[in-house]
Every structure is written in structure tokens, then in C-alpha cells.
Amino acid sequence: MTYCVAIKVDAGLIFCSDSRTNAGVDQVSTYSKMYHFGITGDRQLVINSAGNLATTQSVIAKIRKDIKDGADVSLATVESIHDAADYVGEISIAIQEKHAQHNTNVSFEASFLLGGQIGTEPPAVMLIYPQGNHITSSDQTPYLQIGESKYGKPILDRILKPDTGLDTASLCALVSMDSTMKSNLTVGPPIELMTYATNSGVTQHSIFEADNQYLRELTKSWDRLIVEAFLQLPPVGFIPST
Amino acid sequence: MTYCVAIKVDAGLIFCSDSRTNAGVDQVSTYSKMYHFGITGDRQLVINSAGNLATTQSVIAKIRKDIKDGADVSLATVESIHDAADYVGEISIAIQEKHAQHNTNVSFEASFLLGGQIGTEPPAVMLIYPQGNHITSSDQTPYLQIGESKYGKPILDRILKPDTGLDTASLCALVSMDSTMKSNLTVGPPIELMTYATNSGVTQHSIFEADNQYLRELTKSWDRLIVEAFLQLPPVGFIPST
Image (tube, rainbow over all chains, first blue to last red):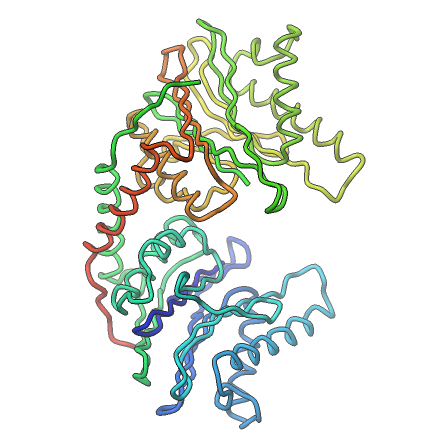
């Protein structure tokens, strides 16, 4: 399994991904799910991936090959994040269909988060479904998730607004990841965080290993703070039974 | 969809259920999923249900009929919570198989939480799977869930211990329900709470309607307290990029 979240606030974009892959409980590996494609002064693009590892690796390989070969359509040439999502969706569909020709019992599905800024267009994030179509975020829902998304959703709903700062949004992504790791064994470190400040033209990439001191302190603090918050709730007021 | 949670602590048992059922988004109804079977001085049993509404209603009807008819095996005669779970599991399987004879495209599956105390046996809770088999809780995991369980799981993991008091466990169940309702439209009020203090021989039943003042205050307080807790977290400490 996997958990990735992409956040779009006015101040910029945040991407956060775990690094655990598994095919059964005894075949667990560590793979980064964070990919960066940038042309200094022109565009910064980030992709997170979830789903069949063979599919996601093939998709990323094809994206890289198109850039290297100077293809007419590639992440180096598309004119908007929307076109970038179309392009990645088409590659994903083609690879899934190729694999499915020989085997219909296995799911070759993959999902992607894609975001960034191209030229002076506003930054955007997209969720690309296994079917190749995609959605973007909104002011009411300033984030997108792929993989094991439920455990980490409540904190995103409570904290994120369009005017949330990048540091707060980063922290929110990490807390969302922490809740997910606590509840699902197939989501695990290293945790990667990629931040992009609107119009900055530069991404900042951080990797938190399992023994990272900040991550451990964050987990411990959140545990304690949640319990303290819980203890401040109004005691249960029973109402008459029917 | 549905969300029900059953908690077993040393002090007793807590059951909490929502009341929304849906077959498509335009066929939404309100049905209680909380059932009580008690013989004063002898046993107190509670059942929560999730899944196909026709199946769960037929199972409850059969349980009631067996008690009324004085059947050899019924919730009035079983000698342990384990035997009660076996009995309910067998009824559930029989009803699912009956319906599936004529239609294999629809899921007739149902899950149940069953718990209580029989005579001087220790109280216990069981989760009965659609396959009719069942599991009980443990000191490490003093709760069981059916339905839409992921959103409300983190708070249960953080708060519940065997020595948690009944009031705190009730509050924890309501907060777990609140997180679930916030994230999933198909889980909704009225919220029912059934508490049983070990060896008391009496259950207490509370119903919180959508406009219940306590429930609204709880939701508002929890929203505020979570945000306050979040703001006390250590600020993101970026580590050097690779």
C-alpha cells in the first residue's frame, strides 16, 4: 500500500509520500514514490505514485525517456498542468493495457498525484485516476490523496484552508502521514516531503528516515496533545433512554 | 454504509451505532442498528448490525422468534457470549445463502457486533463476520468495529486501555463516531449509545438526535481542541535535501 497527499494553498504546493511497497506481507520493500522534473526558470513538476509498482515504474521511465528524446509532447513541452495530467494519464492507460493483454487476474492499476507550476501559470495539483482521467483541488478541498487515504483525511479537513501557510501545510501533511502509519502497517518511512513556493521556481526536498529525530518528536507530541485535547472534552451527558 | 463500535474495558461494555442506511445516494433512510436482548437477573446482550438491511432485519427477526418460541438454542439459552456468536453467525449464513440462491450479483453480506454478560461469566464482545465466524477483543485492542471503520480508528487506538472508565470509553466512542460522520456522508444520526457496567445486570441506552445539544457541543469542542493541539506541535524542521 501507499499514502501520498498533495496540498495546494495560495502560498504554494506540498507533496508528501511514504516509501513502503508490498506484494504480500513477506515481500516488503522500500521505494521512493516522489519524482521531480524541473527546468530551471521554466517549470517545476512533481509526481507521486501509488498502485502496481511495475506500472508506476514504467510510467516514470516513459516520462523520462520522452524528455530525454525531445519528444513533441513531454513534461518539458506541455503548456499547462492540465495537459501534463492528460499526458501522464495516457501513458498510464497504455502501460496498463499492455500488461493486461496477457493477464486479466492481476490489477495493473496505478494512480498519480501531479503538480507544479509551468511558466507564469498558477500552480496546480492533479489526481490522475487509473482510468487516465483526472481532477484538481479546490478552495474547499485544497488537497488530493492517493493510496490509503482514510486515516489521514480528518486532520486535512480540519486544518487546510487556501490561506494556510506552507510550513503549516507541511506539518499537516506530516501529521496526516503519521496517523496513517499508526493505523496501517503497509505505509512506512522514509517519508518524503517536497515543497514549492508559488513563483519561486525552486522545490525543496526533505527525507525523513524512520529514526529521524524530528519525526519521532512529532509522533510523540501529537500522541500526547490528542490525549490532552480529548481530556478537555465535555463529559458525556446522557439523555433519557427511550 | 454504517459505523458501529463495541468497546470492552474492565469496567464494562460500550456499544455505539449510527442510524443511516442507503441503497444509492437517493435512497437514504434511518434505521436503528442497536438491538437489546435481556433477561433480568440472568443476562444482558446487545447487537449492532451492518451490511445488507434485508439480511440484518431477517437475522434479528429470527433471533426474536427463537426466543419467543422457546427454541432449544436461542439468545435466552446460550451459556456464553462465544456460543451466542456461533448461533448468530449460523443464522446469518443461512439467510445469506437463502437469498443468494436466486441472485448472485448482489451482496447479501452482513456483519454484527455482539456483546454482553451471561450469568457470572465475564462480559465480552464479538465481531461476527459475513462468513459466520467471529473474533473477540483483547487487552491490546479493547474494541471491535463494523462498517466504515477507518476514519474513527485512530482515536480508539490512542485512548482505550483495559482500565479506561466507562464515561471515558463512551466519550471515545462518540468522538470516533464524530470523525466518521465528518468524513463519510453515509454515516449519520441519530447516534445510539448502549452502556453496560460489569456485573450490573442493567444496560443504559441513550439516543442522540442530529440536533442534540451535547452532540453539537462535542463536535464543536473537538474541532477547536484538535486545531489548538495542532498549533502546539513542533514546527517542521527541514533536514538537508539529498
